[in-house]
Amino acid sequence: MTGWRLGYMGGPTQIAAACAKIQGQFTSGATAFGQKAAAYALESDLGPTYAMVDEFHKRKDIVVQLLTAIPGFQVNDPEGAFYVFPDISDFFGKSYDGQLIENSEDFCAFLMSEALVGTVPGSAFGLEGCIRLSYAASEEVLREAIERIATAVGKLN
Image (tube, rainbow, N blue to C red; front, side, top):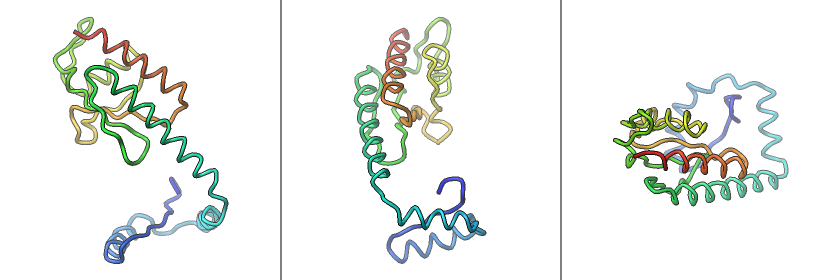
């Protein structure tokens, strides 16, 4: 449970045992209320959770489809979390209004200034040439953001 230093893991015994050695250093001292909340979460109706999982799959599919349609973006289909990491290296060496794109940080700064869309440089994750874009927003917001991105990158030459 994010922020509460509480969770559980299932998996092969050998892997779970190895993880338990490390985990004990990170999440010792779980609170009583956190443990009660976790027990309740595990015992409650999972319908809303499944509905949210379906919604995130839908958002992911929309984002991947829309970004893939923008020339210069190479997008892999993510399998976890709620981020896409498109390769934007095709834009390196391009510029607009005196703003040269040399790396992922430059590209993110360009998107912020020209499209008003916040992204995170891939260099922050060891993925230079990529950006991280969250799809933890409504479909309407995601569609508008990607439309703005497409308009902005269309200005690059």
